[in-house]
Length: 137
Image 1: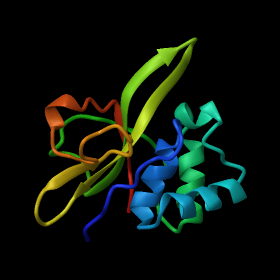
Image 2: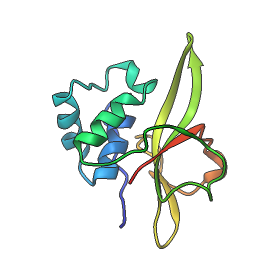
Image 3: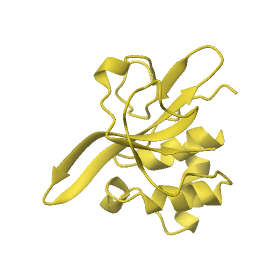
Image 4: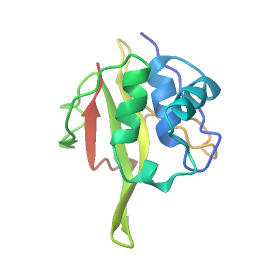
């Protein structure tokens, strides 16, 4: 199944955009579902807690692994995963950017919701430094 990137419409909307890409819906649709669950992009906890995206994925009918798995190699990733990239500590709290890894019949890609990218379907794996991932079914 071909997945398409969804562009985040808010500075901290990467988790919502990643869930939208996995569900095959628009950012607005995912945001509406997120708001109904009390999840807002303005909440900086979205950047440092996995429960928000897990809750949104469940609401969208998508099953995610119960735990995060440390990233090892691109080859060892499952066919679909949420990746935590740009991981860093700020004032004692971890922050990261959510992207989607998808392996199709043609090639593996990373769907990155960041608005300023030239292309949101990335193949520059050497430049992407995942910290860990959540397997998605």
